[in-house]
Image (cartoon, rainbow, N blue to C red; front, side, top):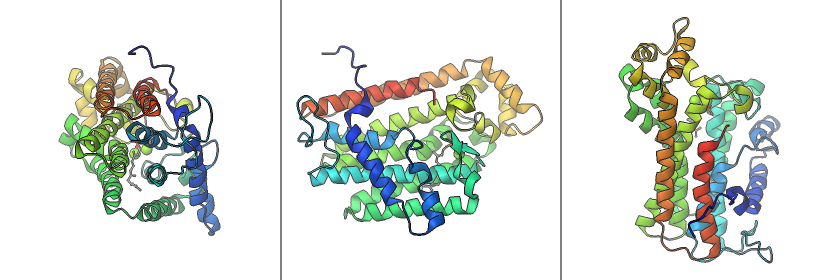
Length: 352
Ligand code: FPP
Ligand code: MG
Ligand code: MG
């Protein structure tokens, strides 16, 4: 029925697999070079693994699209896919989840160097611990591990899709870094940059899972589009939290974007009502008192609400994509689809 699905815990639906993926990741990033070992393992240790959103989304989409129900090693009503799949296809989809997390953490290591961030996930950032040079090389090491895992899939279409993510991430970061004054005020530029730096990872992973499943181009596009809308919503919420959250809850610095001179969706919406903000955006909030004044002007507008509404729009679009998938092949696929939709709700409500 169309009654509430809010009782579904999306993380629980594929929890045994995501746990196994985390363990594989810990194993895969260990190195015989001591400094590299310590650094590469830094954000894969228990307790600082983050939400593991990307591996969870990848496995949920794999379940949502599966032609046959994945094998379960559990009994009775517990139909969760087995941590160690017997199907080669499911195993390969798990590799996509691993690669996604490796790329994600690598990008965070580089990002924290670029942003000169001192905290991440509630602990010291890696750059604050081992310095920029080792931090950058550790990110490179994770990308190397991702490449090896990717190559081992022996599927050039998947290699192309997953490698494209790296191109997009770097492009998004450079777009943000080198934006002209006009571009920093332009919502289309912001959205394009946001697709590149955040949504492309989720979108291409969703497509990769569908391609591995052997689905039609239309279905692959629908899966990609779910990831794109969810990714855009995720980053817009992130940009709102940068303004409304506190460093202690976020586990990373707050007001980071303004301090870096970056105007995000809530700021751009606010600037439409508070033209004085445009001046501050153009000079990247660099003059004395700019930060406080910007926060004040944003709070005197409905920029934050409009950004939340935009995130909500993308969440609704993401849910639409799930409804547009072909008929589910099993009860587990139905549950996974509910989980993908609940994920869109959770994302809007998140506080960190
Ligand atoms: C976090 O954004 C950063 C990203 C989503 C992408 C960063 C990409 C690069 C540094 C390019 C290099 C890519 C690779 C694969 C090595 P943020 O700074 O707005 O968010 P934060 O508040 O979490 O730091
Ligand atoms: Mg950052
Ligand atoms: Mg950044």
